[in-house]
Length: 133
Image 1: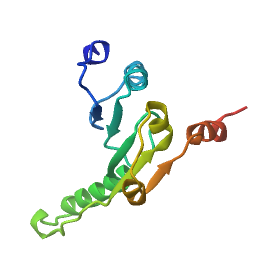
Image 2: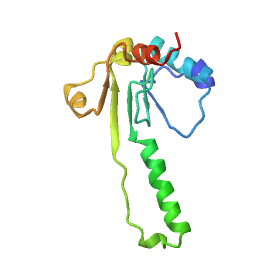
Image 3: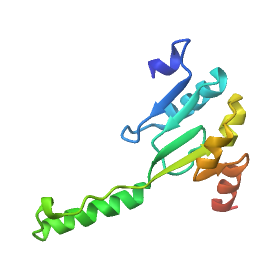
Image 4: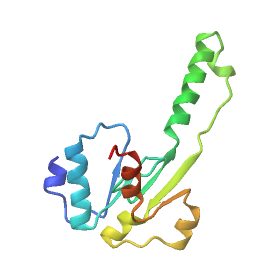
């Protein structure tokens, strides 16, 4: 957490990997830093993540299913060298709500390439749909 408490002055972006377990406290501090210092957060994510400015990566559920299928084939006797090479499709998600919060403007060419565009209010609607109230 030291990076978040005393970040260098010249940071413009933070890139997060999906392989580190992030505690809610860390995530909240990260988003607060992003908002106060106008730092973009990018991540290896196929779905919208609140506070992330941009995400890019394969569909994690499809990747897990693909891996399970390959393991199953190997356990049933297939030789790994005989299995076809499969490439995961990557998805680009841009978050206009996070961009607005830090004063960032996406170029039209990036927006045209995006698979998902998160507009302001998206996360409010998602929370409302899942609430028990």
